[in-house]
Image (cartoon, rainbow, N blue to C red; front, side, top):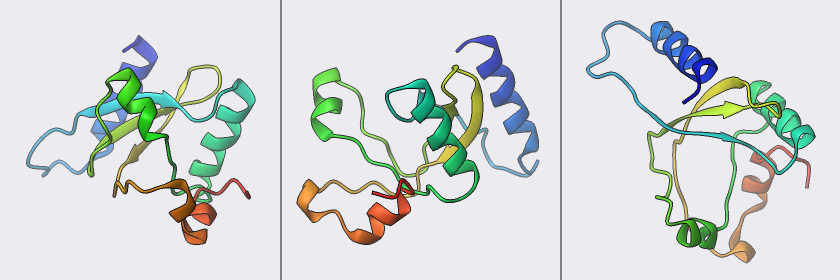
Amino acid sequence: MESAVLEFWRDYLESLPQDLNQQPKAAGVFKFGDSKKLADELAALVRQGIKTATCSALMGYEKDKTPLPQKGDLSIVLDGSGNPVLAIETVSVVILPFNEVSEQFAFEEGEGD
């Protein structure tokens, strides 16, 4: 992790209650979306509490041989310029076909589509 991300993570850890049983570890660092503008917009929606869910294509994880997210994972979200702006926690992981995604989940994605 680059220095800005490490500093952000240290500041996040210092903000946590001192009585935690173990030190949390960052599971990943990523940007939402596929452009600078979209990454900035989606990070802002998360910060505002509008975007509370996200999704990815399973085949992307399989192709890249990347582990699936796990409940309890903590991740650092970057803005479109690559600056760390948020720490988020994965609270659940559900695998299902696209045509079974609920309207509620689509609403929680917060992107209005």
